[in-house]
Length: 304
Image (cartoon, helix red, strand yellow):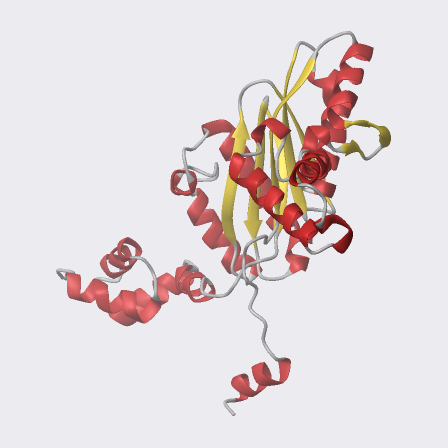
């Protein structure tokens, strides 16, 4: 029996599953709509599509170095205890391994890659939805192929940090330095890596705020503009120390900043270490979590 575009569209509207999967199911069912729905449900596609509308803001941020490639990924789920599910953790690590091996250009490219078990990453994600019973979603990833990368995962996957260093030392030698810097990034979440990255617009905004604060302070308002400008310049140094990684006080030893810690460590190891870049993923950041009243939720389920 010939499968028409109208049939495919009708099945899509019934199940919420993609066009290609609907067409395959109808072909396999020889045009029988009920049988096609059953096939999609058996494959977990209909169920996963239904769950795909639910907000996934929990899950896991994970960082690792795989065959010399530094990788950090975020995979979301609906509840925080899923991050302790062994199957979910294995899926997250599997996604990181795919990124390291294939270095995809974007998320769409990643989802189309083979997961390594006969399924694509997207198909494996759909399988996880079926097995775990929650909306599971690979959200983002990043990787470094140059230099030496050091990975750090905080609080079981709440934050994943990947630090990239340029060094003439081995990965083992710089592991502690990289981990210390990654922990600093995890804890303080600096806006910039170095003060040289702070753009003029940000500096202008900070200066404006500081000048307004002085205008509102009776002790400062009467001071000459030149004096105010000098005070502002001094306070910008504090801004750098608070917002720029390399200028921040090193958490483990506040007698030095992070740049000095890296320099001192490199000297002690008999080599050079330069901080190049880093990526910090915090699970669920930027995702608006749905807040529902529990009583209202029960009432909805009861149809009241």
